[in-house]
Amino acid sequence: MNRQIIILVKQFWKWRISYIFLAPFLLLFLLFIVAPVLASVGLSFTYYNILEPPRFNGWSNYKLLFVDDEIFITALTNTLYFALVTGPASYVLAFLFAWLIHQIPRRIRPFYTTIFYVPSLTSGVAMSVVWLVLFANDSYGYLNSILLSIGLVEEPVQWLQNVKLIMPVIIIISLWMSLGTGFLAFLAGFETINTELYDAGKVDGIRSRWHELWYITIPSMKPQMLFGAVLAVVGSFKVGEISQAIAGFPSPLYAGHTIVLHLRDYAFIRYELGYAAAISVLLFTLIYGLGKLCFRIFASKEEQG
Amino acid sequence: MKRNRKRPDTGLWVVLLFLTLLGGFMVLPLIFLVSTAFKPPEELFIYPPRFFVENPTFANFRDLLISTSASRIPFFRYLFNSLMVTAITVAFTVIIGSLAAYPLSKHPFPGRNAVFNLIILSLMFAPEVVEIPRFLIMSNLGLMNTYSALILPNLAFPIGLFLMKQFLDQVPDAIFEAGKIDGAGEWKQFWSIALPLIRPAWATVIILSFIGIWNDASSAALFTQTEEMKTLPYFLSTVNGQGVARAGANAAASFLMTIPTVLIFVLFQSRVMSTMAYSGIKS
Image 1 (tube, rainbow over the protein chains, first blue to last red):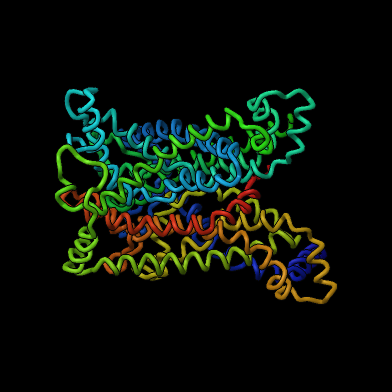
Image 2 (cartoon, rainbow over the protein chains, first blue to last red):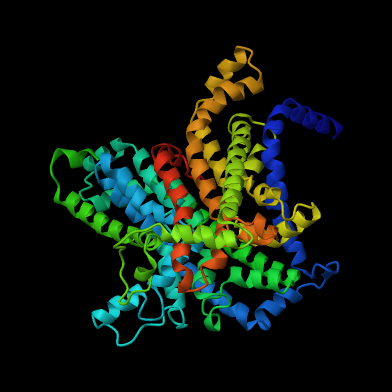
């Protein structure tokens, strides 16, 4: 036993320089990412209002969330609705556009890449100045003005007031901004696929581009597709900023309310930090669960291939 | 693809047409932003609304500077804070990430897999989840309302480290073993062999970290209290909701905020692709 410890210490000592290189990142990573995640879990089992020390109260925050907090259920439903539409749609769009851009001559690819990627560089907050005019509720709004002039509607559509329309508008804006890091990963992934695979495919009787995509491209892109999927999951569950920027906080009848907004409401307006921590743990669990699901989907197919 | 160059392909033209039409649609909101920023007041409130500016002016930019200089905090203060926080964060993110990527990729030290798995796990991390503990850490460290509070939480950037590590993985270890035989110390190996090899990946890390920090409105909202510590996106989040009366000046501010991200991407784009090729997660 003692011998093993000595060997281990020697091993650590042997690689001490590696740890020194790693230390700055690891310390900041532990302090601002790992510790806060663990602290959130701990706080979620307490009542804590900053003024008094946290008081353990077991599962009651979680019970409260699902049993008594109707607005949380609204936030959860809205977030799931958003994530289930935006996550897959943004993923498919990123893949599709990357694939289409890969079909065009190399020289003009950067131009098209920039056009499709630039929206993801913008901030939801900065662009809200455009969205508020584009989707304005009165006839001064661009969209209403067009719809009125071609006679599609009789009176201005209440894009940002109508509780049925707020989420769809947020989804459209988010999709516009969604061709981000995953999209770049796909584009780069397509470029690294060994072209000999395509030649071999032709010999094996692959005729159309669709067959090529399905039998050669996608299987060779698994690692990039997993990376993109994980980013799509994370991106689609942390919706909130755009909702607040275009529909206000709280939005009409909480129609644009999301988990992140609910969390901020309880944390930094009501200072019920224990309860807010429970909300954040739930959000984290959702993202983590779906992220792991992505890992399983892409790993299992790899084994089949 | 080679095939496209060999024979004119109707499929290619369909693809190009489709991409051009959709691309036009994608840039429309950005054109509105530019157009609104340069609209004189009479065009902003015209009915029916016009998409494109007819008599462009700098009036909105002047208005932005005058209206904010009359209040206690001039616009330049927000701009300065944003530039400062973003520049320092991005620079240190790259340095800290490069230092960590080297041993993670090339040294089989005990615990390496555990650390790397933790990094992969944290690709699923969203800062929104840890706002409360970060807030408590900042107040306990006495860092509230300082630049450090805006910088420190974002320095450990898992996606950046992941990309640099993957990028370095493609370099054969033999290069480093040759260095060892020559008697180069670890620091020298890092400085003269690893660093030049990682450098192409910097463009990507710089862009991704720049976008995240430059556009981050919540850090300033949470960790700073006084107006002179706030950043540009925070400023915009407070003024953009205030209705059409300020639309011109707000568009000018939003325009100024969007420019740097676009410029940085256009500048670094060609190098980004070479890094993203190694972005895959092999599970």
